[in-house]
Image 1 (tube, protein in one colour):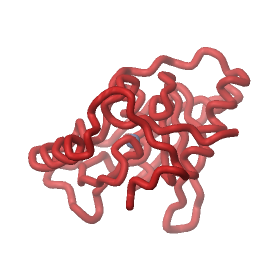
Image 2 (spheres, protein in one colour):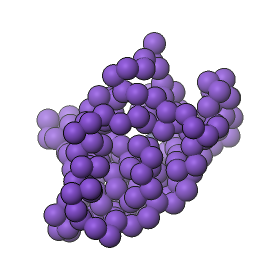
Image 3 (tube, protein in one colour):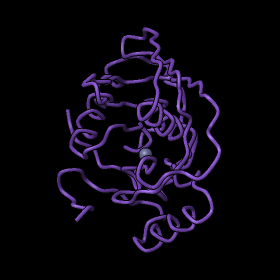
Length: 188
Ligand code: ZN
């Protein structure tokens, strides 16, 4: 198991659609184990394979809700069904989202309140999770990564411009950048 470098926005793998997994083998098991290690070290609540440079339809998540229930799994070849996205302006406090590939930045974004995730686990078995609130947001964020979409791409108006400015200021948005969880301190 290993912590992997996390690719930063501008790296082509983050902006391209990922491919379906066809082999549920040791390579996939190692990838998923490394992704859990990387997510924990970052730290983050979700991580998609393209973020560690692997163009496959895999994401992992690990999040504990207010009731203390831990939601943790690897979703392979996922499908996602969503409730309609509420109209109106996103709330800065309640709806601000971050991304390990745009490290240290947060911007508010409207997301669907309800999401149903259907995916395969590491043994190739189907599973389904009905999510609401923040877990539904995590699913939408990670699923987007598999289609080459970052949350910054979805921001509206002023937030979109602010994110683009932050990316320029950090000199991101170009090929070849990554950061190493546990070594680089991008927050401070
Ligand atoms: Zn992300």
